[in-house]
Length: 496
Image (cartoon, rainbow, N blue to C red):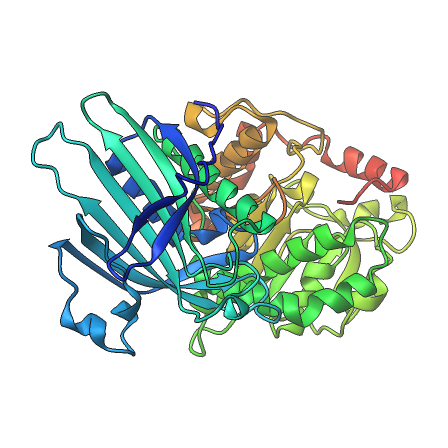
């Protein structure tokens, strides 16, 4: 059913009154083909995830939630002025079924303040299964005037979402209604647009009730913890990093992306390491512009990164490090895994400039970061098992173990899609599992379509029992690795 909402005439706008005598005004309504159960399910998702309605919001923190089906009278606790239930509205012929209080958390807490909001669910009683039924979901912001209402919330006393359903015909309708502040007309263009958008979201989610979500976020790091850390890093560093950006690429994309990855890693590491089991340091293989290394070092997580060629930005992102021969956190190195050549020294005279060779051996326990590392992506779980190091890999461009561009076969699981990216992620996962890693998958909340993170931090078998060279052979071999990397250096083609 395409979205084509109708605005009621002036005579139809007052839909109904609550028990306090206040009139709720219908803004838009639309036919629907989904029953009350679907409406309640989808509205629950929207209550828990207000970011689906507004890009200004991060999330909702649920302060309290109470389900009491069949409540028809307002409990005595609602009379208490400091009770979260003191804002509950009641409606004739409707029973209160659920009430909760959520805090809307904005993306930029320096600009916008959080807002508490009471949300309630009401429904009419059916005497017979074929009787029509109406369901109301009410939002009541904890403000006393339009002036107190933050930018991201409509300037109204309340928002109502009404679902009306006729089981006999299998048809229904949805509406959005506002409870206005005195002296604040609902003819305001912004309020009209907001009502249109709110109804559109309900329509979209309700009519796609059979949709099965394929991507699940926040499986490793809880959303609230990640978002709070990300907001802190963004407020702390973003402005300065944008102003001092020295690369030719879009600063906002790269900076916000790396701030998001840094936020995830910091919260991941804080859960993995303690004073008894301290953080062992990290290495970023194929570190590109070096920004991620820079941010993590600023936050006290010491590590270093290397890439086949240096970047302009390295001059401002370099810091002192006792983890490298040059005593700096960013080094120009070519990775020649010892799994391909036991000794890379014989190739030094072929390398231009100051580029050195790294054999891919790291101190045991070092956390390997492989962020859009391109040719190094399939090598990441192999290097990790060879040195007994945990890792995170965020694949981007697809190359085989020889460094050639490569499209792996599509995943056998058809629910994962058949794109080049899905095929790459599945192939790297297979390599990691062959190496004995338990692979955890997280879809990062970063501004990139290449946002799948593969995490290896626990094992199914001892690292010493893994035949890495046999795994390399199984997945195509690395025979052209050195030749391709030499050509890559000559063309200065490394980069993100």
